[in-house]
Length: 541
Image (tube, rainbow, N blue to C red; front, side):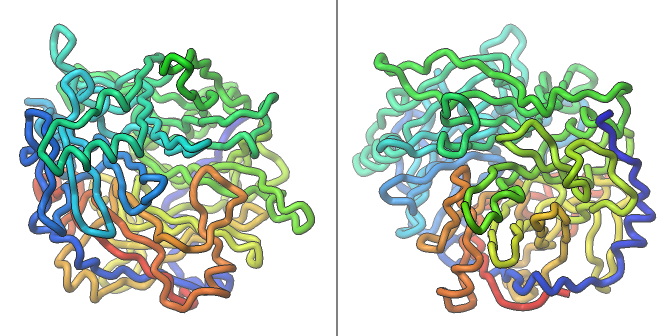
């Protein structure tokens, strides 16, 4: 039976409120203002020519964006393509009118150059703008054999092509030739010409792709267990949402409650995307004998979360050095018990084995949590994040940067709990979540970067933001689905403090805010800010 035990939130506070010291976490992170961006001059979508001509903006101006997708140029990785997303802050919750409107969607393609601090942009063609300019899609970049693609699946947005225009979840897979599109936009911007865009974007539809709020993971053929081995995508949880969010009962939603998988498609000889077969990862076919809020399928009813690549125990084999690729599903919203609480227990699963590994139960893939199981208290929503692997520590560290927290550190330094995720969601907390090779978890808060918050005048950041890794840092290449920094090599070769990279965009606020009825959502904005993240040696308490 695939079931979880109940969560006693009072017990969570009692057991986790006491300050902790983890000797194995001998570093912290510090936020530093990146003065190469001018947040007060963030680019608005209305500044991009509606006629399709490309434009170059003044130096140090970046677009106001959140919930977007990105991909870097393979030859000049400081050039980053930004696709879709939202140009306003948190959406509304009223019933009188749509809470997601076309005016707040990003229908432009931006190219930001972090070396020159120059942004260029062009509007998507009419035939593509609604299905490509979506919010909260799933995406992954794949570079192979000289080709560099961004794959975007699903996403939520406005549709004007149906009889009664309404927001929908798109059943699309969009394949973007990243290098060619970036080059085309930059070349056209020099003469304010209309760039070729449609030529570098291919699409296909499949009802299985009708997902928003999930995540997408890439596993290359070298790590795949398929026969024959092929490059593979995994679509991890999410939902299909149809209608105007909060729209007086005219909306419907259905969670995938699963992990879907399909081979990475490459263009055929005719330049078309071939037919795609989507299947369910076997481990997620497990269903509880009685569906309840603690069953596996209920626990998989998650969205708006972080899904990060991870290593499972066999990757620590000092003889073979082989990685067993997997993923860690962190928190997400909302529990199906009416509490408006996020999920507090993560799920670890393997791509190469038909099992799911739950924290504290490494020898029994599917088993109830005990009362002493791990609870993720902080950073419970999709946010900028970083992964660092240490073979010496036999652990992987996930740095979670801002976002939304169900539990938070008060001004007095005491752990406190929101009465629901709607009461005080946005946070400035940064935490490090460690998983060792026994699937034991530890999460600790990092000391506040008070100087940063005093200078920038913001109080919360990081929700639906992008982390851009710094160039030249040691990478652990055993897991190729995403860059995982090699902590051991950083410790031995770099001089501290070490710049790990930069946070861009997301939702930020200058007020301590929560969802309605606590505040007016207009207090939040889509950010154009750059924030540098530094690794600092310091034992965390």
